[in-house]
Length: 301
Image 1 (cartoon, rainbow, N blue to C red):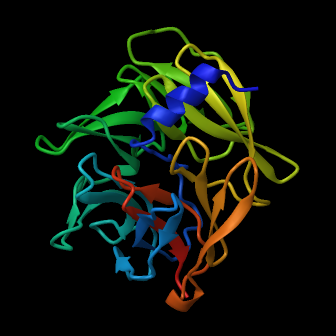
Image 2 (image 1 turned 180 degrees about the vertical axis):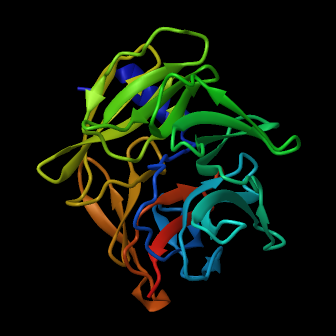
């Protein structure tokens, strides 16, 4: 049973929601990102408005959306042809919500970046893949166009979530996928805390993230604190679903096929059917800090 302290912490801090995704893209499908308005009515129920803003509309890999801290921009990962035309790489792009401008933030040669996550006013944290194929947690300064690799001895990092400015929960790839805590101020090797976890992390408070573990095709949610304590949230995602975003301390949104669902420990209810928007295969989600916009990734028709 999750402790009362963790439940209260999640409830107080869900204005900041982050989900983290696997770095490697091998057999990339053609995926797009759209945003939809989200409203909370006087009855305290959330409703999705079917008035999409298309962040991307192209053949290719566009994925891993993450809102900026002011909610005025959306970062995402885009796969491109390399400058020389030999092979593919990924860069981090930013969509300006007011102007609708799309900007290549990283523009790095021979280096791929994934999982864009604002770190502070000057740095964006990413998973950085170097020419040798090593995957590290990294900070990127957009002004200097420079990377700072954090803990080069810990790799390959697939995805991550910040517990505090010097500690991140990381998913380390391997024969067995493991959950570890990367401490930027330590030289000690981190302990393996869990195995066979899902790809979606959410930072729900300072010192607390949530993650999932799969058992028989069902992802069960857990909370992890910065000292390594793990507690069950006693909440399951729908069959085959591993991406989610919290909207409050008791409810989260998931996508399955063309539909969005609101999930709690008590019930799973349909929130919206997006088939009229030619949306199917919904996967990753992101929620703006003020909870007025929901970004989602879906398969191109």
